[in-house]
Image (cartoon, rainbow, N blue to C red; front, side, top):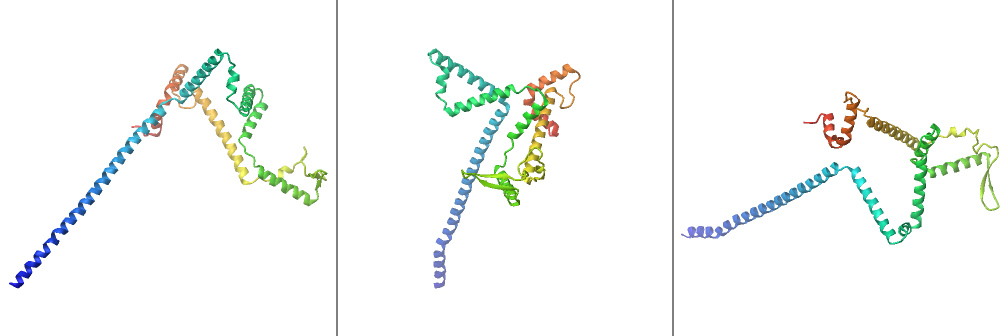
Length: 276
């Protein structure tokens, strides 16, 4: 009897522990499930937000591509002109000087800069007509010079090195004037360039200068080809022959002016072979 009582007591003491363990496991599993559901709902919300944002951006991009920027620019210009005329009419109606009142909003530097700009544009407009080949070449040369950034530091270093070399060889004397200014005196006339000087041919530019010159030549060639392509496109001679006579060619050009901006994607897809 004592052994049976001992076994019963042991079973009675173990039963609370056995019931507590499954409850703790169920609670942990329920907590994990809730965490997973929360993360899943958060991911769903994030995906929905991203989808809505992408749809809005795609709609804006489609509207932007479908809008003719030249027309927007023209409308903005017309709006500015109308506002200018309206303000001028109101000022003149009040008996005031419009130019004087508008000048109050400008500084002296801005006014002088604007005058220089107008003068430059007027000179460029007067010089726009083609007169001779030399003048046209001079215009192209000046335009190319504006795109070249000279290396003044490298030039000064090369000049000082040349002066030191000439002074060391005895062909150049450095003389100090009464004012303390240093001047270089060329003894045999071999340092300073003249019309008969050929020493410039011995100069060897560095690789960066050569690369800059090559890039400038390539840019000029690309610009020339681009202008040529634009001229050919304007005349309708840049692509395949899609006309049977001159009248049909003019009609196709008129269609291209109005509808090419809307059918560019379709034509590109046909050319790539990806059109379904």
